[in-house]
Length: 152
Image 1 (cartoon, rainbow, N blue to C red):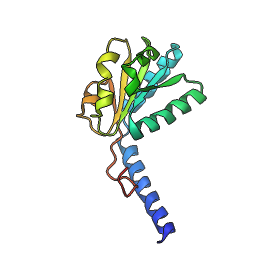
Image 2 (image 1 turned 90 degrees about the horizontal axis):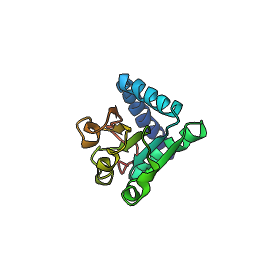
Image 3 (image 1 turned 45 degrees about the vertical axis):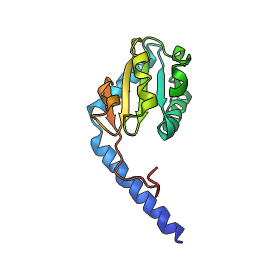
Image 4 (image 1 turned 135 degrees about the vertical axis):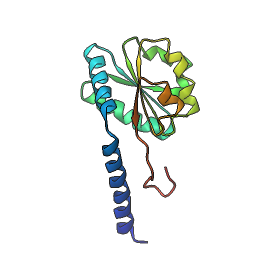
C-alpha cells in the first residue's frame, strides 16, 4: 500500500473542495460575519447547533470563537428540548450546521428556537433544504467528494 500516494490524493481532493468553496463565497458570507460581529458587540453570543460530524465541526468553530474573544456555546440537539434551550437568549445568533440540511434532530429544535429573537445562519450543502429555508442566511458548504473512502 502506497501511503504517500494516498496522502497526496487526500490533499488533492481537499484542495479541489476548498477551491470550490472559495468560488461559492459571496455576499451571504460577509453578511454572516457582520451578523456575528454585531451580535458579539451587543454582548450576545454565538449558539452552535449540529449533529454528528457537523456537530464536531461546530464544536471546533465554537472553541475557536471563544478562544478569540467571541462568546460561543454548543447546543446539543438531543438535549435542547430537554432544558438546554436556556442557553439561548434574545439577541444571540444561531449557527446551525448540517451536511444535508435535513438532519431530523436539528430540525426538531428549530420551532423551539423560533420563540427567541435570534437570527439563524445555516451552513449546509443544500439551498433548498428545510434548514436553509428556515434560516436568515444560508452558507453553501456542499462537498462533491469527501477525501475519506467511506465518504465521511
